[in-house]
Length: 116
Image 1 (cartoon, helix red, strand yellow):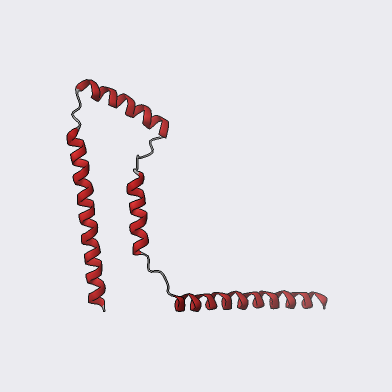
Image 2 (spheres, one colour):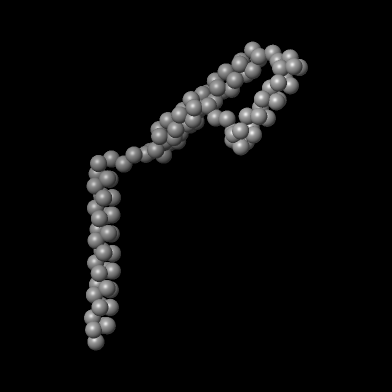
């Protein structure tokens, strides 16, 4: 059983590594396409400073990469099945009832002690 899970994890990590390699290759391609002259560099520095001041030095994050990260994290979650949900729900309700009765009995005991 553990070997199967390990193989699944290894496959997922390989898939993630391939996806990351693809993203890096795409970024390299886009950076190679842009040839910036000295004037453009100066303008870019000025505009980037303005942007940083406006955004309080907040990092720029692409929405696509953020959603991709959210999607991959949801795939990693192990969602409980129906049997487990019933078991956990019953345990939670029992816990709540037990402590409600416990604190109620303490309150009643304090009330009767003060009556004496």
